[in-house]
Length: 148
Ligand code: T46
Image (cartoon, rainbow, N blue to C red; front, side, top):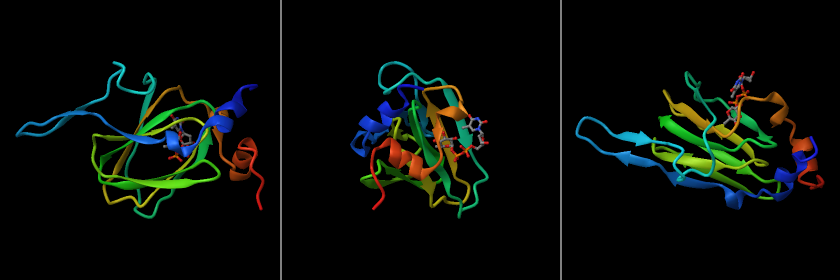
């Protein structure tokens, strides 16, 4: 995978940001839309969601070579910490229309789950285990940052 190091070499957490998805209020409930119409940073290829999450769970703990994501608290709330090997930032997701954009090459961890929370992820790629970097020392190596 010749270009794998590229996303890690160029990504930093300043590229992570919250996108407010379109939401339409109604007396009987609010409707939120995510569609490939240009308002998203990538075309959605896959959707997955995590639920029945014990409140003390720590999910994520990896980066991706190519995959970009929008992470949404579809129910409840939780924290997402993004890390580029130099800096970290924690976002608290608490509204279903708030989508956290996480580009490739960024380490992410999800924690602080409220009871009944649902983590919905919109992904730019099909599932591919070879796209994952699951060891932090390997992640730092790809970032060309040496441990002190
Ligand atoms: C991410 C965060 C936000 C599949 O078979 N297909 C899939 O599409 C996915 C996403 C996962 N899996 C398998 C792989 C593992 O055996 O499901 C198991 C749990 O996946 P993982 O440990 O990677 O779950 P999380 O919550 O740590 O991470 C997931 C995504 O995998 C990851 O891309 O960024 O949510």
